[in-house]
Length: 584
Ligand code: PEP
Ligand code: MG
Image 1 (cartoon, rainbow, N blue to C red):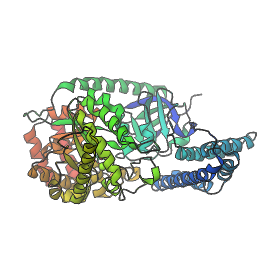
Image 2: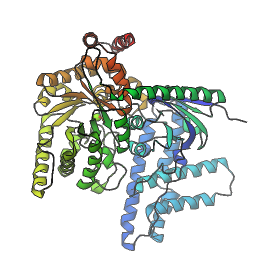
Image 3: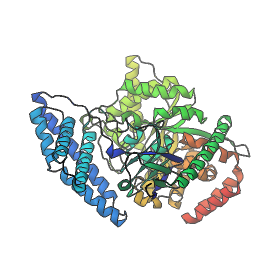
Image 4: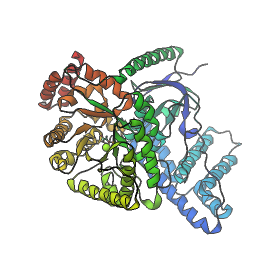
């Protein structure tokens, strides 16, 4: 008998329809290395094991805290599970057994954890009891999390995903997401995660239909179950009926046809009906996006998030390695500008290198993140600048500083860039001359309110509406429980955007927008009306924004923007935008 169709609601974070078989992440075994250690390495290995335990415990606490506000049944059940996990990480047979294996068998911690799990499973193997079977699954889950946090070599959680799978997980970190292969994956869904977090941005960049925050879903699905992810409506459907399946197959082929039509716009200009040209550039998170960037007809890269070079690895990337990675992204742009943002880890964006804790993990969004971290570790920033300057020989580059709050941060970064250039000169290495323009991201309210002072030290301003909305409204962009309150149309956010845009226009320096607002055709008329002529977005959105611009009358958009900026209510603003868009 076929199973009952189940529907779970979540946030529609990445559009499209994914139809396939479930690949439930936690059930996938993790391939961890196994090796012998020397006697004198035992203490170090035990310490490494304990560091991984602490990190896993912090992650469990985070998952636990995410449950607040979830439906009462889910909160109770998952809360109980996470409490059990936290307990297991304190003092359990798994932890004691693995530690003793490191000491007596002299094996690495990953192997010790996996061997201990198998031993525990064997002990109970002839007890046919559902409760015990579930507990063993829990132990495996905790063990997998530990192994993931232990591995020196990056774990590849999706190395064995069968083609066409829908990846389901309780949580996907940006690092996990960066490892999804869009050619093998048909979609993704998780139980936690907000619509504007980095995981969501990466899923959109990979073009994977995705739903985040679909609570309770994992309890009802196993690997290989048939699943549909409806990224447009925020639905995960498990065991779809034949009727649902065929409706969605139809929807999917209609969408594909529309997308093919849009790609025909590739070689056309983004020009309004009254002749104003707008530059549409791509945001790039991963090198694998470059093909789509070229296919979408992007006029360069408006935001290259450099975090990808620091993800899923144990060591910091060297200057040479960074140089080579950047060169591969700059060359295909054939002289179109490439704006490279310096490292922006912290908040929900993580980078893995632990290298003597040079890059801290689990940094609060108000902590040592973005430019603050770079200035606190000037050698890290200088290395990055040297790599960027060298790569600048291969194209037209600009440098962008994230999370700036005052002019002195920009001045100090400029000093470090000058030092990097002097060092390259002494080494006789070729680098970009004259030195590339340095721009400032406006993504914190203080930066927006002090935009006129920042224009004096910056060659251009780029507005980051994602963080600007988060910090202005005090809403965690990666938290699904407050996702309904995240609203870039809040008058406070719009006024900060307008204030910064006017500062750049007055100072006659280039202005762009690279937050997610730039890639949503709903906001295009408003942004043009506020003076933006340079928008950077996920490459897949370029055709839709171009089409919106081509249908737009700039004089009317200016007029509507003025009316909108006089409003004090977000609902009224949304109505004014939607009415205007409906006319075109
Ligand atoms: C932003 O904050 O709007 C932005 C573009 O940066 P990120 O999304 O990488 O934080
Ligand atoms: Mg940001």
